[in-house]
Structure formats: structure tokens, C-alpha cells
Length: 205
Image (cartoon, rainbow, N blue to C red):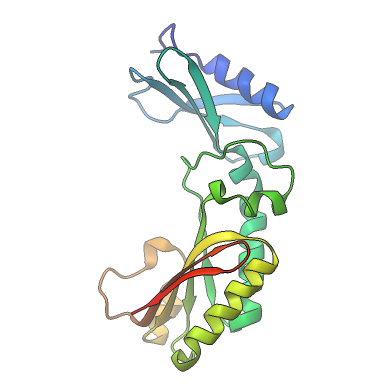
């Protein structure tokens, strides 16, 4: 039951005022809404039919603050396409896993994909799955090539690279849920990040 302190209508009004688009209330995030300090809801937008957009109204100590992930949802498909294209250009056959946690709050209102991916607050991360015939001897070289390609796009992101151990495992991975829990499914694993200009970290095991 809504309290007088928090209002789904006010969340919808905030979204309309911020983005100049039509939004509609769908539902609360869970049955525990609102809490003492916040109200979390999903709204919809005709431009993104079928997509849940996360909005939160929070008490920050007397003042009410609104936040949302509309830009992240709006650019999700474009980001996935960009990452996949860059990875395939460097590695050839590969799988790129990129999904958007629904509670990823994006400050501001980026007006383009370029502005969105270059903002560190967008917190873009993805996972790259490589087939068993990929050459691990070139792992540093190729990872740095991918990082350079990302930096050419001014992308601020972190990413993981897995070299799978066998064809069955590679074929079976279509989403994060398909990644095995044991450590025997990959032969090499890298963790890297870029700041939009250079590769800032790289580690392998």
C-alpha cells in the first residue's frame, strides 16, 4: 500500500518532466514497496515497448530524490551491438554477454550513445566467451587490440574474457545463466578495464 510520503504518480511525473516522453506506471519492484526510505517501481514508455524501466524515489534526509535507469535501457541494444561488433572484428568467432541490471541508476540524461558509453557512471561491463580453438598464446595481444578498439569509441568499461576448454561448453553458453560454476570449463581468464582513453588494468589467470 502506498504511503503519503512516496508516490508512484510523482515518479511518473518526474520521468515525463525529465525526458519529455510519456511514461506509465507498471508495478512496484516487489511486494515490500514502499519501504521506510524509498519507493521502487517499474514504468513503461511507448518508445521502448515491453521494457521495464526502473525508477526510485528516495528520502535523502528530508528531501526527496528521484533516480532512474532510462538511458541504460534506451541504449542497451546499441551497446550490445557495438560490443559484439568490436569483439568479432578482433577475435572472429566469439560470444558477447551483456545484460543490464535493472537497478543500474544513470545520473543525468545522455543525449547520444557516444555520450552514454563514455560516462564512467554508466558502469558498462560485459563478458567475452571464446571457443576452444582460440589461441591463448595471443591472449594479451588480442585483449589489448579489443581495448584499443573500445577506446577509439571512448568507451569506459570493464570486461572479462574466457577461453573455453571444449566445444560443448562453448556451444552451451548463450547467457550468464549458462556459465558453469566450476573452474574447469575455461583455460584462461582475463579481467580488463578501460577509461575511454587507454587500457587501465589487465590481469590473467
